[in-house]
Length: 241
Ligand code: DX5
Ligand code: ZN
Image 1: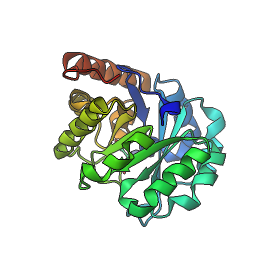
Image 2 (image 1 turned 120 degrees about the vertical axis):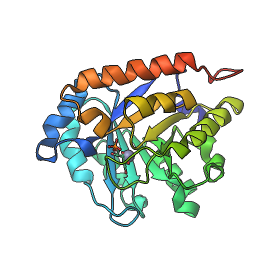
Image 3 (image 1 turned 135 degrees about the vertical axis):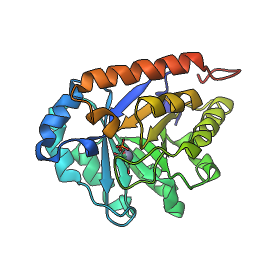
C-alpha cells in the first residue's frame, strides 16, 4: 500500500535467520545479531503441517524481543497462520510473511496483518509460479522468494529460482511498485551476489552468516558484495524507484 512505502532504491537489507543460531542461547544470539550491523532479524515459524518441521512460537519471540531493536521479520511457514497473527503481533513482530500457497485465504491474511499494524510479506515457494503472486504485489511490503524448499536451514540454493527474482523486479519496475524483494534459503556470499544481480534487495541468511564466528564481519562482507553486484547490474531502463 502506498502509505507503507519503504523500498529505497539501492538500500540493501541483511537479515540473519535465527534458525541457524545456537538454540541453547537464543538471547545471546539475538544480541549478537543486534550488534552485527544487520537491519532485520528473520524468525522462522514452522508448524509441522505447512512444512515438515517445527521451530518456535510467540513465547520465544516475546522473550527475545527486549534484547533487540532490529526489525523482527516473522516468516510464517504455517497452514493456519490466522491463529498466530495476533499472538506474534503482541510478541513484537514488525513484519509478518504468509505464503501465497495458502490460496483463497491470502487476501484475508494480508488485511489481517495490516490491521495489526505490522508490515506485510508474501512468501512464494520454489515450485509455485510467479503468476500466483502477481495479483497481490500492490498490497504487500515484501515478496519473499524462497530459494530453497522451506522447512530446514542449511540447504543448497536452487538456481532455478533466479528468473523469479528477475520477474519480480521487472513487475516492480513496470508497475512502479515499492515492495522489497527478499530471498531466503541457501544465501551466502556467492548466491547473495547472484540474487542481487537478479534484482533482490533483502537477503535472509542463516548458515551463511552464523557459520562465521564474527557476525559483524560476515554481515559487512555480504552487504559490500550485494551493493557491488547491484551497482554493476543496475535495472535496465527505468529505475526501481
Ligand atoms: C527455510 C527458512 C529459512 C532458513 C534459511 O525454511 O525459511 O529462513 O532459516 O537458512 P539457510 O540460510 O541456512 O538456508
Ligand atoms: Zn525463512
